[in-house]
Image (tube, rainbow, N blue to C red):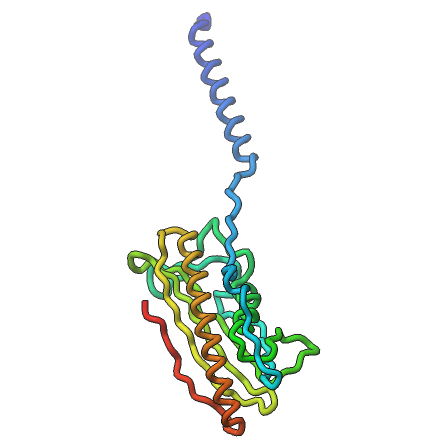
Length: 233
């Protein structure tokens, strides 16, 4: 009868114990929930200077109703969009808007248009609100483009001014604003997006004022043709 070798038994025991320990550690790591970093939230907001002075309009100036902005498909969520090549939409993994771009823009439209001083009042549309003119807006693009260096943010907004009494379109325009990003990361894109939105709001205010002048001079005419204008990169 062959006696078992104590050293060999010891080696087998160590191997078995090591294997059991590895299996236990693997099982523990599989059961432990994986931790992902929380997202960083960013906002579109107005600079302090935009709320300092509001020009006063005359008592006979019309009231402008501002409809809540809409957004094209893909741009109606809190995810921040970027492009590395045409037609391929991607999202930053850990960076988001604090709200949808359309809702954030809605909070900026009224003070920006009121500051222009062309209207007696600028009122967000509600069930009880009545006015002379109505502004409809739609975000067509708000995206960080990495197709060139430096990267850039493109903000495209369609605006339509409607006569509430006759339901006719007075004027419309697509604003396409491109702003270079100061850094190749989400924060640089957010800063550029805020600059693009503010530049567009200034153009939108001027567009609304010009359309209003035409409406006052020739109120019977059905529509004012305003060609889309694009801000070059």
